[in-house]
Length: 281
Image (tube, rainbow, N blue to C red; front, side, top):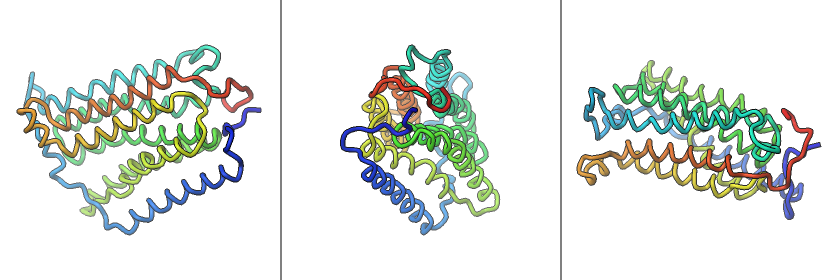
């Protein structure tokens, strides 16, 4: 039988239970902190991006067109994951079911191109919903993939559905509250940032099922850079002599993050060799 959680020297059952407990405590603390914070409405100033130039008849052209890399990375990822067989001798996926979180991740990346481009054509709260919905598919499916590959295969696959529902629900809840004049981004903040905080802990605390951990770290760094560029939208636009803005660069950095994950998947191999009798094989 395939063990759903790979063992390595120094990772005994008690120690593993302690590490899982630590992750659960961190999650509870994170959610509790948000629970004590007042509701967070969407600032309307968020839609006022620095670069609003129209090029080739496209409003906010660079913020729209810079979403194209999401499409190319997403499609490349989907084609890779859907190969039959996905790879020689189960090199990239020891269990067939492991493909599902990654398939949904790259689906979310692909849809992010359309959703974000649609939003940036005429930024407002209504269109922002379509920007955020596919992004939650990416956040939560990646979270489930890391749980499956680092902690427990069956748990990660079982949690995929609830994680996705939580992600989509957080955006719909925010939109519903905005329509009633009491916008609340707290669930969406949790969906976006708690996985990004938990994944590094999983990488540090649990043994790898596959090689390529460095690629995941690089992807996280690219995404962190994307969030920084987003915050420096206007400053970068000014420093770049109004050639390119921070938000445009944010799209490129976020797409680079997804590309690094695809690169990691293509190159990785099982750490302990292929094993059989797993769910979905």
